[in-house]
Image 1: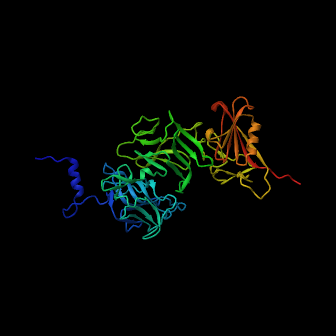
Image 2: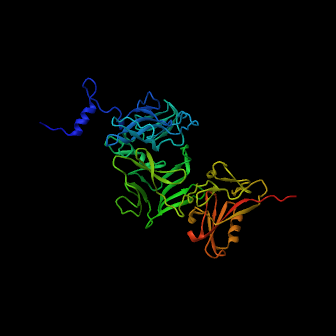
Image 3: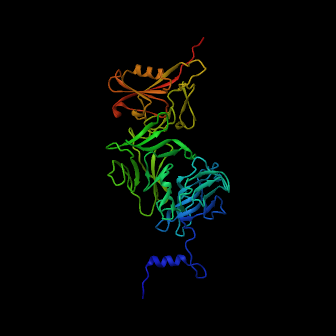
Length: 472
């Protein structure tokens, strides 16, 4: 008797249908040829799911997990921006991203687990311009993948691959969306155009940025970004100049360096095949599951993994002093973060909270001083400084707007008052307050209280405000 492999028997059973016929799994379709159009409607994309929080997934392509079930990659239209109406049902989901998401699939390749398996969007074409019901994605006869507002509508995004011999599109087992030619060579791939997330096997190339969302509910580009330069992997706030809050330095300067997210590490290399110049050890990916890292709107670079639900498993960027206060948006603009991560304004006389119920939203000056050096028709506003002893700033000193060494505290304060672009000055010193360093900032984000005996330095923040008008 010929013995059949157990997996073969199971596969044959899964293929049988009523009447004794056989067919392939109906929802495992990772590739499409020219020309194909997908409309963002339930009727056009029958493989769609509404999740318990109101999120929606409509799959155009799906690559089933090699294990036959579990977290899998889908390309299509996804809506994750719905908000609950109090304790009632979730609000209708109306703003869609065209992108790649991780969805949970059962053994029939059907998207399921509607409670814990909410789609994790890891790449999107239109993160700043969500589309509505009826928008279309088209793999054109000329080889371009385009997103339109509707059938025959305006082109909102495209791969720009028209005339480059594209033969089709596919979603890989690594989550990479690829346009390929007749020789199966890659013409365009989503891995080269990251948004706010990286998948295992993906690289952040020299000159590219991982850009955080504005907020958890707003997918537009925020001001925090991660990039690789000749001197290492760095995280910044987009200001003028950019303010750096993290750096993984290199053992040597490397022109064209890039970072790669592998199973168990994030490494920076000078070129393929060369030994890494720097690396961060990460948790390894368990068998049959999916892991990804995302730069969050709060500045953290978190790793998420499917463990019967999506959960953060690691925080990649380690800052000093630790505890959460060293991140640039921990307490919002002008906010002061204490050791127990409580947020407050510099003082009540010159600042007010953006939201009294949510102190971490930051503060605004009651009378903001102009920090622009453009000519103004108004009489010059007189300024003064609000001083905050034992308070530091997250910005890497080398990326301050201007640095002045070997100065006294009074000279530091004067340097900021005399500079029309200075919004704040950090006076950084050791045992002698008459011999310190002065770091001028063009914009003020979160500050943090420090204990000199822990950080081994002294720091005072001087914040520019408008001088109160003299009384007649």
